[in-house]
Image 1 (cartoon, rainbow, N blue to C red):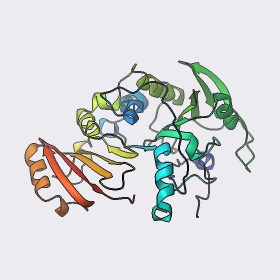
Image 2 (spheres, one colour; image 1 turned 180 degrees about the vertical axis):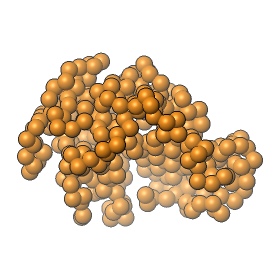
Image 3 (spheres, rainbow, N blue to C red; image 1 turned 90 degrees about the horizontal axis):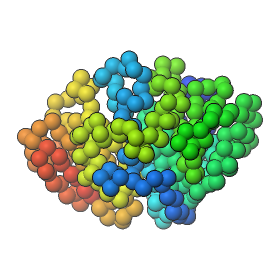
Length: 309
């Protein structure tokens, strides 16, 4: 099995983010519980997503105030991928086969992971906090670490750490690992400690969530339930849209079911555009096996079977 050639720590020091690392060869199952029960009106992964204005620099252009969010449930993916074997070779783990590039946690001991495209992430684990902290304060397996993470204080019960040689802050509580880091030399995120604190506030209901400021995204996320993997595209600013008639927001989700495992919820600018798309969606995009298409106003939902990502 091929593995990525470098860890996220190495990528971060090089000024990039390992946001595309995936999963492969997973086995086992766990029951990792969230720090706080999810809002019944918001999918669990979305309760971790702060409004872009909470994490971006104050002078960020309005057209840049959006990010695409990805989430996956390791505890559901583990037995699912194990059962399907090599059919899912396009799912990758981190370099050492773990569910995190720094913390020594097996996929079977991890739960929900939320990883937007920008330098934010959250991972639920079954590990004691001291073990997670030790991982950031000591070298990775086989790699010397000259500058261990330093203690930065606490926030709402989360112990905060920071890397002395890079713009990278970590919050740890009850096995949950929240991170904010610089993804490139031109970094649009604000102060990383403030970013971690904003994610914590969002989860605990003390700050605007993404779904609070993007009503369209809120609607498409609520159309999905029981997700194993999710990719959520918010309402794209009009100046960034590729072509008239395309969805303005969409969420793609997979469950661990054998059939009907794929759901796409798409939002369009208006009812007429949604109606035209729903009439012949295959003309616009590749459909899953045995698709079912339904429409409610300007929202279209497609369900079917598609086990490849």
